[in-house]
Length: 146
Image 1 (tube, rainbow, N blue to C red):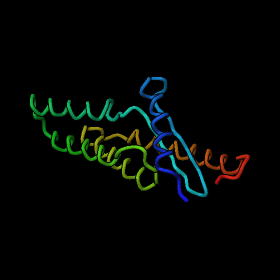
Image 2: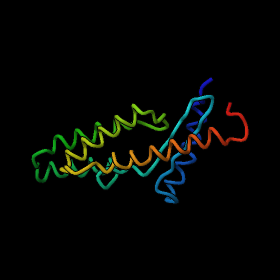
Image 3: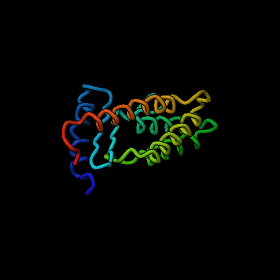
């Protein structure tokens, strides 16, 4: 028996409500059952300092007014990142996080950022916290996880 997608969806919707109301900028929910782990990280949809849809609109306006070199790559990178992120809820598998990280880095580069990726650094730091939380839940839970 696997985790219920419907129930995970309801959990996601409740947590997303906190973000939509501006109570918190982001939430990470971890559900573990019978060896299956679901991590749902929700935050305001930001990349390159703003909402991805807003960024796409800004790039279109920039194309119309200035049409600078690299605009095609930037627009493509935003579209690829949005497609890669996909619609919630979704299991944050290592493969998915790697794909999001790669798409984010491509967008950062397309926008001219050649320094170390802030997204990659944040993901590296969060891995330790997620592993520690998983270990704590698995070893300290008071009843069997079924």
